[in-house]
View: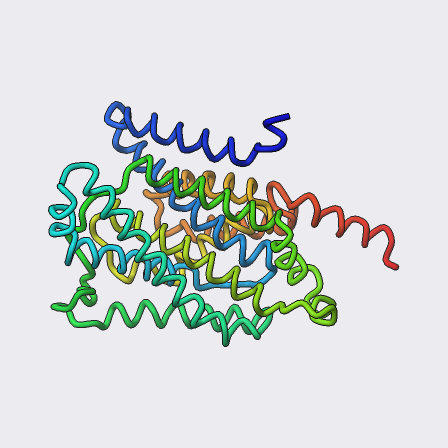
Length: 328
């Protein structure tokens, strides 16, 4: 009874506890496998946040890497420029570093969300291919702007930023991944979240019923951008070196493939796809020149044999089956 009523909250609590326990014993895990696990967690955050836009709301964004870049640069600049004084002011130690890291992640996430709002308000009045083209262009604009800044400036120009503090660990990555899954799942299953599904299922009918579909699309865009910004901050403080080239069009394509492969609108399917593709990407490291070819073949095969993805959204699939049986 308790699990049925508070199942999602218990899931979140269990995920946080497991993340903390694993993090305490992280030094006993091989660095190589730990690095793969951290990449898996960051990609889960990216895929789940993009699934809110592309899967649950039915839009098609190709600019998710741009929000990740804004979050990465925002949090990295804060810790590089003001991190040490802030840690000292907070008494130093693990507590001070953790608090500064939380502030840096939130700053990166908020900057990404603000940019998502600025881009989303005008562009989300577009639909389908037009929206995909606009978000693709936005992704390239962000990359080019960061690349062409002054090398002596806060963003480091084409060389990017180096010497970022390695604050990211197993707990932060998987705690934020669990929170992103919880927030997106709770929103979609709430009364307010039904608006996202209306936009996806029949936007014209929703507007005729007086539903402000643009507001729901912008909300999904801003929340998705916020979590992508958090993922960027985690990435920056994991790699300790970032450049704009790492947040280009191909990074956005990687995340889109995870969403499509997992099943549009299926949170569990997207999480599984993020795990599978991240591990597969690691095994293909020695065949980097063929990586996109293999990914493209996987996508084509999936579209032919299982277009609904690994674990499709059950509700959406039932509606499609019903329409197939009864066209009226």
